[in-house]
Length: 201
Image 1 (spheres, rainbow, N blue to C red):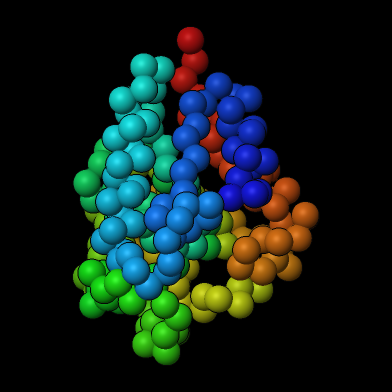
Image 2: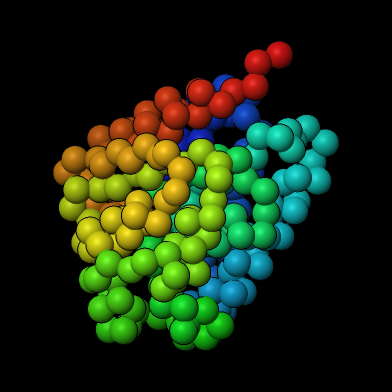
């Protein structure tokens, strides 16, 4: 989560109320990958969402969710159950439906790697079906040199979408956007996109 404060500071400065959180077995939260399932982590996301909407200053008519990689996959799934107005998916990952409830599903596997090498339709995958049904505002951010996900993953997400969307690809960046220029470009893209949705007093 080290880079996340810098990534959302522009949104805070615009007046957005922002919640950052770590799921179980991620970031600074305890636990080991391989002991919790995708379903467990989706429940973490739902708990964070419920906390956010319970806060006094939350604008319930202007809810946004940002997810990266695995978090992008989970953010997509979250739209099936929660009202989300604006969705940002940074290099969203994709997982086979069959491992949704498996505690070992998040461990690197040849099955998942092979699954990501081919295009999938919205009726093949829970997250893609969620994006197909999503009716809010949608931003995709991809990278030119993704060493984790094949181009088929982002293309599958875009093909699933049924609303107009913006897709920006950061030149020269790896999956984690480790270079300062890539991180700064991501911040710029997000900030410019979110400026459109500021609620004027």
